[in-house]
Length: 565
Image (tube, rainbow, N blue to C red; front, side):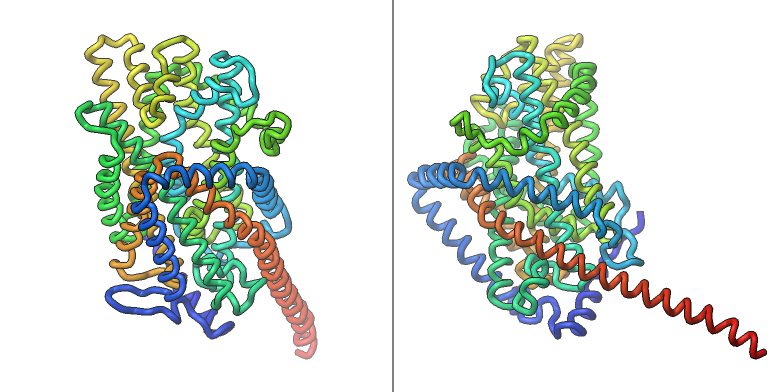
């Protein structure tokens, strides 16, 4: 594969000088190896520092505060999360099949800078890698043991419902959110030459004010949402790494202090990848992840109940499609329960808070694709691959439970981070292999699982660092290495602080709380993107009309010239 080069910087400067007199980072402070937008960088860093100091100073009280915040936001804002998730997905489908579908990101002559395989690899690694590793076994078992719509637990019907709900949480809705943010960022950066920051998306509504206070507020919200969304994923990931290491070597603890040490170590690896840059580090790690993940999934498919998995994939997909309308608008109104607070509402808040990071990363690697190709690519392929992964691991776990092999439900309830490793051990024990070989298979599977979580952690952290770096440098694409290192370290610090302040509950609270205000930002983004696409389409049609008129004039002129001769 040829080494791709990003040429956005020149495009941005040229267009901004012509149209606005502005260019990315024109007000930045350059000092001590940093190149920072003063308002966005310092205010974001100050707010995050205040959060860190307060949480560490009041660790005992922090857990209760996080619980109260999560309960309040989920109870009073849950309906809003459910509604806007459908709006975002609906807007994407309208744009994919509407009159703007043929607009190409980067202009009519732009070509993709990455192969389709590399593009999908980066989408998956940045989008949901850690989450899929963490929840692919635990979530179906949770739902089977406590069916969200009622009914008898532990039955085949409960297992079927469990996979339908799990597919819903990891299906089109989250990728619709990512597609919205990514499309908006890519369009205004590649087609309008604006900085690759969230503020640029609102240029049709704010005009030059995107460079002033309104734009600064948008980027500050984006930085905070991105850091806390990343911290949620990194916190989940390091918990699973600790659980896997403890499973392999019981002398290794699973304690929070040890998880903080792991965050420091893995963040160090992520920092090295960040220093290597997008093509040198992130792309290669993303492709490595995809190869290892594919091999790991095939391993589980062959060692596990193969036919049950293959049959389940088809049936799970059909159930997801059949139940899609009901699940999409269900808010527990008549049940009077609060099940969604810890599941759908948490997920939607997590995806929304995660969207500036994933969206900006997808935008940066998606130049040259049409609106339709972009939306369908982001929606369909990652969703189907996620479903295949969820079925392989989820149906393997459900099969063991239905056959009363081991007690996965008890293991998940005790510590969901151990679910995958417990399942791998049960699968190995229940093959026809002799015990010593089965033990080796279990150890190999668990080792690969730990390695995969670590590499997903690294790709999420380094990709997120590059994104936060763009936001805090005014949209510049090549900022100094010390600046990239700073934000990579800050991501690890925030994840560690959340773990110290309340563990999984604190991680969920961070996602929901930062996701709520950003959900409003994304609603406005829908309108701004439509206006920008409409203006671009009008320009393209006008240019096409001028070309046709020029051609007609030429054709009329040729016979006249020939007659004179």
